[in-house]
Length: 219
Image 1 (cartoon, rainbow, N blue to C red):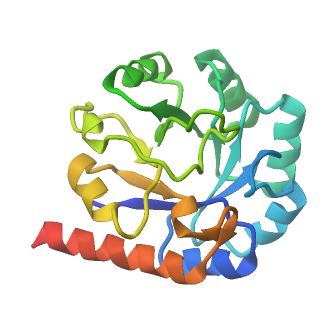
Image 2 (cartoon, one colour; image 1 turned 30 degrees about the vertical axis):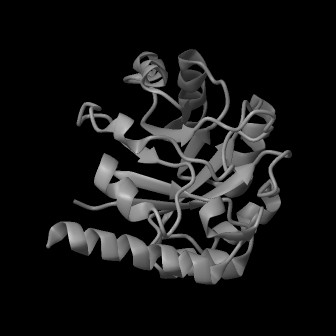
């Protein structure tokens, strides 16, 4: 089975090329001022030109206004919108209708009952993203480098299409794939040398670790 791999929070041509060159199926640009990975729509629009035909572009926002989403969609022309805030099912439906784009809705997970929150989004969100709940005091809903118990996802209905995120890196991706067998994975801080600073070597090493884990599971 194919595994979608999203490198999120990209901001330079060099690291974008490393993600694409190593086989990323999705690349994410973050539009959230409090994030060290924040980029302007203009910058993302420039970077986006190198992605055409190679991967899907995901625009990541947090409780964004229609005006800001308008700017992002017009300037970047993303393939998908990722809503990483407290957006309700109604808001997800509004965004889908307004832009005619698929929407991925993010959820913060710490314990099994947190998965109950996904039910109202069935049939509305095109894909889900499961991230770890942020540490106390963090202003960032994602990219905090923390993970959750991936075994919580083992019992999900096979029809649930999702990406696994939160604290992934080259050292633990094998365990994550073994525990949850996700259809997609999303990594940000795990391929950074400092908050918001993607590292081409870490990106390459992550893909090597993914390939090695998948080869072991197939043996």
